[in-house]
Length: 169
Image (cartoon, rainbow, N blue to C red; front, side, top):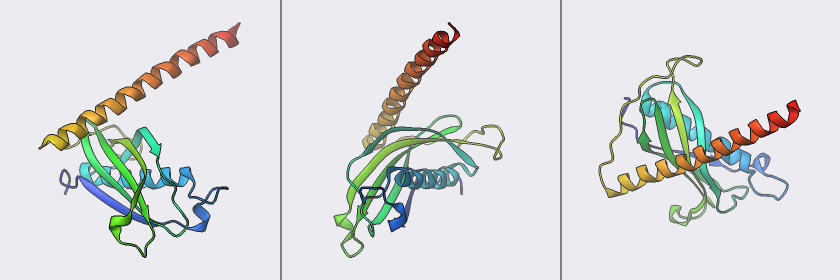
């Protein structure tokens, strides 16, 4: 039922095919897991097909090893008119260990927009309102991460303009 699934956890087993040349899980694989969990959470909240529009503040904190049980938890922390912001934590542990032994490996905020069809127009999502101080802190965090992203977008736009102008000369 849309508007009720605020949190979603997906689990993966880190396989040999997931590793980079250093023998740890490749960052691109972790980003794929983040996108998959975020998509499932966005669809669960909105009830609509959803597309990724931004990932902000991604930090790779600790490596993930082959054989680790990886949990990717997406929690809704802000809604706009058509957008949904999720805080995502990626944790890993040896599957023989207790869940309390899981270590934080990656964190980010990922933003999705609900669509009326795979190539359609954005649709309004159910509003989410913070209910306590922790929720309000997470909402503020989402806004800060996205503001940083806007600063990056403006810098890239200025760079492109300067590059395009230089090429025309």
